[in-house]
Amino acid sequence: MHFTGGPTPDSDASATSTLVPAPAPAPAREAARRVAHHPPYDSGHRAAYDGVGDSPCESPEDTPRHLVGGSARRPARPAVTELRLSAFAGHRAAVHPLGPVTLFAGASGSGKSSALRAYEALARLGAGDDLATVFPDAADCVPERARPDAQGRRGFRIGCTVDGPVGPVHLDIAVQAEPRLRIVGERLTSRGRTLLTTALRDPGRDSVQAAWHTAGATPVTRAPFPDDLLGTALLPLRVAGKTKGQLDVLAAAEQVVVALRSVFVCDPRPDRMRAPVPTGEGLLRRGCDNLAEVLHRTHTDCPRRHARLASVAGAGCAGPVAGLGVEELPDGTVRAVLERGVPTPLGRLGDGELRYLALALVLLTGPGVLAMDQLAEVPAAMRTLTVLADGLDRGLDRRQLRELLDLATTICAGGHMRLVATVGETAAASARETPGVSLVELVR
Image (cartoon, rainbow, N blue to C red):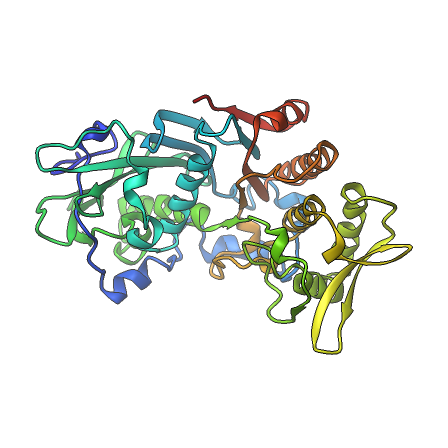
């Protein structure tokens, strides 16, 4: 199977096509948000996980050690192990291996943030978001020197490799950004075999032609897919799973979707974290503006984890820290305080201290405490949470960054969590000195 009728993951970016997305039917959009239950995530594997990962405050490191890594009882957790930026913003033909803790470092303008943006975009597409929502400014993702073809089409190409129970699975997509936004080519491959391809056959239609591996009497099945949704995320509800070939396709697609959906983007904003907040679901938001609310929840529901966070706080906050408490105020709001002889409201802390606390909280808790797409149909012990943090070192001093990296490498070594972040040139030195950190140094 080949990519035809439009730009492909192997074609030059200057040839990448485009137009303006047409909304997909609601059933298709909903299908992209669901994961069907096929091997390797069937009920036979679930039996080994009863009672594991069910606590809403449970940290990934709480999973029993006999379930860590691949074994006869459990497969390895799916995780993105490679990011490919074939033609995206300032990146060309870039392939970046990703370890348990990976930091993109470099000067301003070297492409650190755009690399993380590509990862987040893949994650959101894997969760079923449509192309226009993921890329509201798609033209900015097109390489500056990419020239339009005779039809005025330009675009970009990104991809990733997800390793897991079925081995490495490669996903590559070609997106047309001008004159109309659409996915014009997608390819899913595993062990040298093409499992899914999509291609734009008719530019006048709001769909692409998909073909997936079937085996059996009919080796390939073809059907139209929406041109604004990731085809891989649609496969679990489009493939019957009756033949071995179909089961292989489902397993590979599910592995990719599980890895991409298990992402939390963390961007603590200290200016929004200082005021008392009302109590609610207790799920930490991307900007961590409801940090006090989440600490109120962990203080009540997860005392052991809260105590660990209080201990870590002492390593990153000024003065001797005896504890981390929460005060309920008369107006029904709550505020967090550091116990430093006298209670110090978090609103009095410096920006670096607040960012340090928020990032440490994310590393010490599981998905049940984070406002993210929850994979209720996949047990927690079968998932790897990936935290994306742009500007991890922003506002942190060297001691805080070192403590945070030590915490990250310790937690991520168990395979339950991964961290992909960006840091500036100065912070790269600390990263080089920290065992377990993979450093990707970008140049302008």
